[in-house]
Length: 329
Image 1 (cartoon, one colour):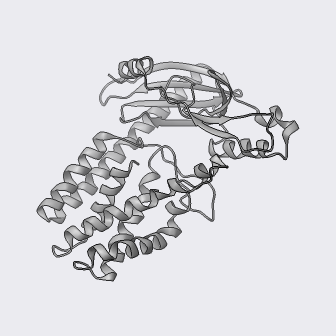
Image 2: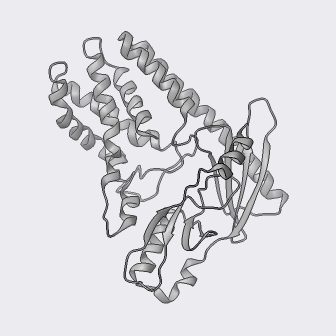
Image 3: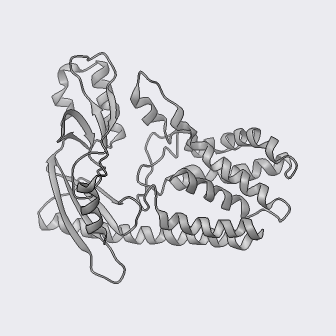
């Protein structure tokens, strides 16, 4: 989730069991602790662009790291709250706030290495966008009321709002998944991998992507409660058999980097239509119906012993905004 929402959820978690004396200091501690985990965006290497992708939402978001992260938060925050909290209280509020960081990111579409170092699988439930203003607005309102009025009731209401919204996202995903399976059935496609997730900043318009017959297929579906689904047909493109295409480079840095990017992309790699040398992550695009990857790696076969370059290809121009808003509204 975005840093603001992370912080607010951490503040809510700490407020939910704080007494009136420590209420505001607890909120500050929980807020700062929840945001601390995302400092992993600064980890990486200038010479190895994929390292940052591998480390983001990795050990700092793992369950086993929560006590350690809370300890770091306590050491950083103690000097700010020592007139209001004991060391024990600071650690407990930091623990509550930090614990929300990795757990809440599980509900988004990118996923976290929740069980690192025992598993290198990214856990992702895909039921809420990384940024969802309606979800965040409810948290801001109720958490702010709790802070302003010094009352736990509003903190518990905020937790209730989060639970309700996430459950709604879960039911929406179930509906979109059923639409995806029906659509695949109509075209006699046997689904190998299925990805169903909300589009950016809303929970109405969903992206459907599935692999079948060595190709990636897309569609969009709008799900308004008490209304029939509205389906938007998408595109198809062959999946990239990168192991065969780059067999002659086996053992090189180039080959190993493509393998790393394939793992980060759940093996769903496609050629970028507008960038000949770019291998893209087929799971993400600006529109649910298109196959223009949001990010990818630039492969230069003349430099097999150098790390690949990572790039983003987001286009929020009128040609993207207009069809997105038309589908959404």
